[in-house]
Image 1 (cartoon, rainbow, N blue to C red):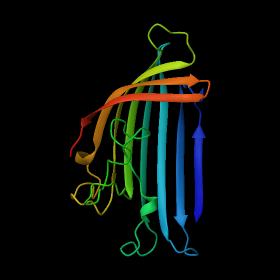
Image 2: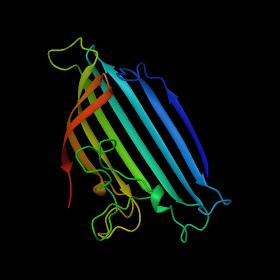
Image 3: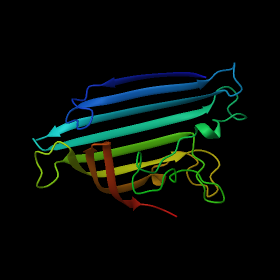
Length: 192
């Protein structure tokens, strides 16, 4: 297996950035020397904009694609390399991995494509404007994974109609044990 990645980070803070960007491109290839031949590519672009003294807007976009490397019809992306969407790191308000292809039992299969977008407005906790260990945010998330094998014929190919959306509030606390993030989210567009 061959892995490579490139990243660029101009954010002015790791925990509470107010400006700058983070970009990452990653590639993973199962080489002909191994038993699995596949490719997996992913891209992330995250940018922070300072809006006055107390507000920061973060926009994040992620896309990923993968498949078999040579004979794509016979050897698809291995199932354990699939992309997943839904959960705290992608689309909050949905259970982990549930936004994408599922089997007949309703279990998540993941897919060979993924699209995720997030918009988040950060601001100080009301009444604690100078506290450097707490920060709140309001967010909107969108995304899904796509690929073959879905039992309900959803998520087969990328379609804007299959994207799911959520919105909510989050609290980031830099605790003595490390940074902790709590989110309260409500799905805006969901289907059974």
